[in-house]
Image (cartoon, rainbow, N blue to C red; front, top):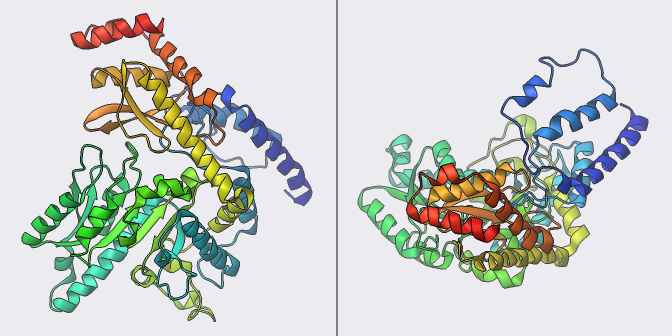
Length: 500
């Protein structure tokens, strides 16, 4: 493909993307296929000779799209938003064309420097403490873009582990490192993302999972008890991961209480994961939820969730960049350059050597929307979630199971977990709406998250709710209800009568 054909096909692709997004609501949210469906449609081997472009695009629509779950569909309410916008798409297009691999300053000077600038832009927009900002005179901190929140948690845990072992070696120089490593203990809440557990597995450290309170918030007294117990048993606390906006119910750990406790444990690395909730702090009225952030050693949030920036783009800030980079430095001769002593080389800030020009799309989004545009987008999602909550509360057959502070509503039909599981199964089977479950206070709940960039009251409000009421009304519950408790049967009968 030469430039002339690229111009033609590029214009066609932009038109295809626009039509796809404009007509997305006419497609099923989730596909009606079985695992292995594509194997029957795609040849076993790559083509020996070039094929016409038209044939490729025809197969996109006939073979690929029927197997897609459409994350930007107005009725996709599962998980959290998959951040996307036209400026971000264009920035990725430009970054792919440039093709820079920014492992060092010399390999991509503008990539490295723009990343530092936009990380400070974002940190200031969120109201983070100045010690996290890399461009502030005298600051020892700084920010870096990782691929995901899982990457962020892993690299800070590795840094904390390295620092802890080095400090212990000073106290016990004759002790074998493997013995010291076996004594290290990390902590998180039961509501923390599973990536914390995976990071502990990779880091070969113990992880103690702590119980949150009735609102799914990890509290200071729980942390204090665990730290004291483990120290008494000869273990060494070294890392704790807390959450602002948990995956299950968008709950917020009490950073102020936990940070106060950790003042007596200065060697414990205090990480805050705000993968979803962190983006909301661009709105000043939401910042009360991160009270206590001044105690943190690191913080991450995902612009690729709730800031209109396409995956992958996860922002991580650290209080002390040397504590991070000293754990990850591998410096062969072939990667050195003339400015190694003065410039930042981002390969020391994460696991992979190679890195894409992620800062470009965040820069495009900031320039195209401005802080006020991003604030308006997040506020609209929060308002629509509250509207959905109000609709649920109008019907005494349902209950709300979380504090609705952002774009997530957890609800359930009053009755057994099996009843709610069947309800969600029937809703999702329609292909018209998609949600996922979670466990809140050991109950099965249904998560409804506002996801699409341009969601409206019609998408989120009465029409959407009535639609899955109708789905439930037409589901064949008679055989199912015969195996349920009397309470569930009563609910089902009342539900059918009122819905029809």
